[in-house]
Length: 236
Image (tube, rainbow, N blue to C red; front, side, top):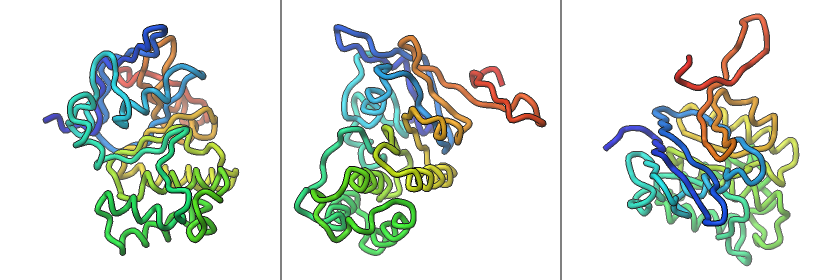
């Protein structure tokens, strides 16, 4: 079994009326934070959904911790976390805390660890008010915060985030991005984004351009300058 955290092998998705993207081979062997960039409609959400085992590619495969997203999705799901645009799954009549308790239980998180995680995330995201209120009464920003907490609640090795700061206020978004940078020391975090602030916080980027997925690395041009260029990993 391949030891890479993530390996993409000529992955592609075609809806019949439109090809979304193709790729070559991309391998990630260590924790890091990768920003997934590209214009609207380029396939960022589709790629996140494939890697999260929520839909299948029409070409190629991807391996998550050695498991195929095409053939072994059930082995992958407990090992990853995900937060996607338009995602449901929360029970509207249950409180935020009751929902997180259910999701934690599904991932074998102990009560002690669950409460510790919730306490920590309260310092990052605006979830305090929603813990004792029905999820259905939460604002869009509060719901998004709960979805992000759910993605990390079981301390997964890999987390996929689709536009994670949408609906968050500026302060909460900044705190969350700082937490992603800290977590990326031990966790592979891949997040799609349009925000320049998010792109600038990580030296690693995947870009979907002209229907092709490329892996890029940002490096300093000069030690005396803030200038940056994006280059392919093979060239550095």
